[in-house]
Image 1 (cartoon, rainbow, N blue to C red):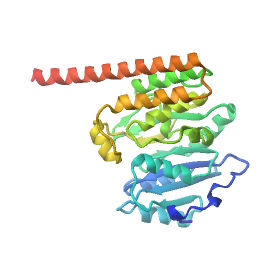
Image 2: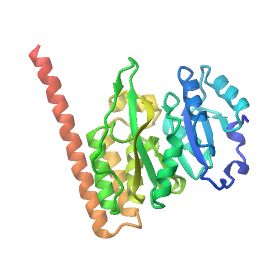
Image 3: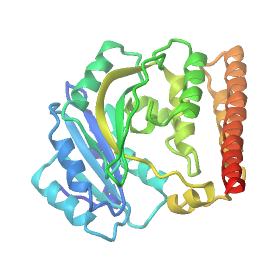
Image 4: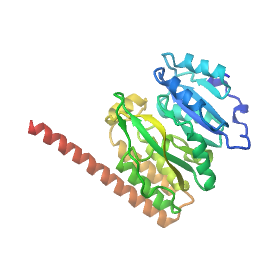
Length: 307
């Protein structure tokens, strides 16, 4: 089943079956190197009621032919190709809008899943109807094959208070990217839609994570069920260029915080003291980030002067 992005019809948004339909959403651009492994890991899941939706951002390598081959063999694979190239966040939004599952998860075209990933996440959702997201441990592998992995067994986001969840998410965002991956975790569709999806700006993923923390508690499967390519850490200017954003590289973190402040104060479910608490937590987060940045700069300068 192969379809073009511009020809999407209402039938693709039909109601899922009795078991929760899970949408694995993969936005891709030139992923021929690892894409077969990624798709195969999804099709090998023990959970049977899922769809694999791929939004191709006008790839110029063999990505299209690989996707079309899989989609012709398995009706669960739905391949769409954008009519023109968009920025990375917009492609994430595109593939979500093309999906129809009650539960959904974004996945990189170079990542892969344990065969039990969907089954165990769906089971965790069944334990608490208030869960808006379920996380697992994730192993990161860099281009040299070096594995990066940490298990955090302390307090997570299964908390009733939105303030405490928000504060906990801020802590995760300053601690280690290996502890939690909100964008690449399974979520309830309604909660994701409530965020308005990803803004076309740097740190849009962080804004998304903080919004989701306000909407409800998160479950967690304490097993390593996801495997991801280790991210490349670049300066804001480089990331803006790579991701295709149209914004200045200055004050990106301040702009991100300002957007989150507006999110907090327009969230109708929060009480006044909760909004104040979250805002104070965000100020603390910014101070910590700047402090970490200053320490890295000082260490770099010390190394240079020590030569």
